[in-house]
Length: 109
Image (cartoon, rainbow, N blue to C red):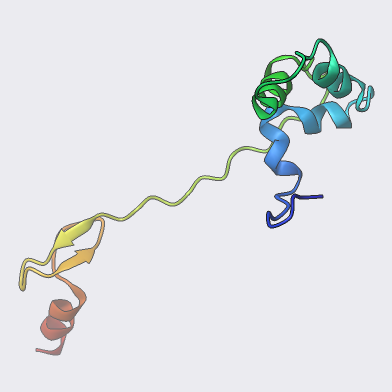
């Protein structure tokens, strides 16, 4: 479930804090419930910070043999801008040289 006006981001949204791993373990949700509800301040001043801290710091380590998280997807590198040697127009290329227009003119000639 998600808050009104906010899309649900799926289980990957909480993977970094370990809550998904703890739910998938043999203990179920017991470690999460214990980490979230033990020794709460009265009244809680910053509830979201308490939840974030407790889910990242107070959860027990994963059980041996638990699945490793998938490696992060690498984003493609940004190809830098170059200036054309013929017309000084900017174009994206990994090597300096001529832009497409100048290459087409040279090929047609």
